[in-house]
Length: 283
Ligand code: CAA
Ligand code: NAD
Image (cartoon, rainbow, N blue to C red; front, side, top):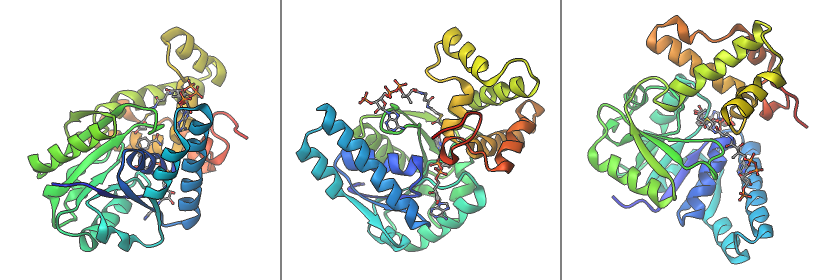
């Protein structure tokens, strides 16, 4: 199984980061978003980050040019016809992901592996809408993608060893560390992280401390690089809520009940950094 050409679907914070690391590791990459403004913004973000690296001397001007040459903006989803691997990174909603996987399945060549960057949704259920469940896999990158070393790899019920091995080797070529986890809601990362974030929101909701102090406790007391509320804003409060809902529904246990304050912020459109307002305000 030879992976040379990659397509990334969704050019938000994760999709743009994923496209960047593939292009930086020598892959030909096309980046597609349903909203072309987001694709443009995604490419501009990559350009800015790489130029910053050039400025710091950690990337040469030649390497910068080569990476940007490998990166292509796709106006149509039909670019899937040329991909060996497709990584989907759109909104964390089962019905949206299933619709995309069904479309990709009809467009992509039979050898193409379809991966999802889902944070919590069952891979098996996404794979079930395709005619190639054996080639569907979870490839869960962490945010910010160019910095974080981990990729959780999740097989669906039908994923073959060959596909798993190809994705495992590809992850290593990205200079990331793959860890295989089983197909359970939230996998390992978000089963542990997201209840902590949700509990931080409950702590705020119940007036135990204010936003700054909750974050300060976890930063100075537990050496976390970001406090949980800052991290929630960084991830996106909509994504945090969708993940909590998946855990709550998937395990049927009330310990995963999303905090009402989290719901309220999402309803208000306060999604964190990406909208300029969440638990904190951003320029
Ligand atoms: N995109 C790309 N690169 C970024 C970045 C971003 N958004 N933010 C920071 N960086 C880079 C900087 O350019 C810098 O690179 P160099 O070392 O090459 O100069 C490096 O990261 C360090 O940045 P800073 O010095 O500005 O800031 P920092 O030391 O505070 O680190 C951080 C920033 C890496 C984001 C750090 O705060 C951190 O590790 N935060 C926690 C991140 C985390 O927990 N991620 C997981 C989220 S959960 C998830 O992803 C799973 C899910 O499904 C929700
Ligand atoms: P985001 O909101 O920043 O970006 C999502 C992008 O998908 C948007 O640009 C949107 O226009 C696009 N999109 C929506 N529907 C589409 C469609 N039908 N076809 C093509 N593009 C479409 O979201 P994000 O934070 O990048 O998250 C994307 C995925 O990655 C989610 O599944 C999320 O759970 C997962 N994830 C997020 C994080 C995080 O920290 N934010 C970390 C790991 C995984």
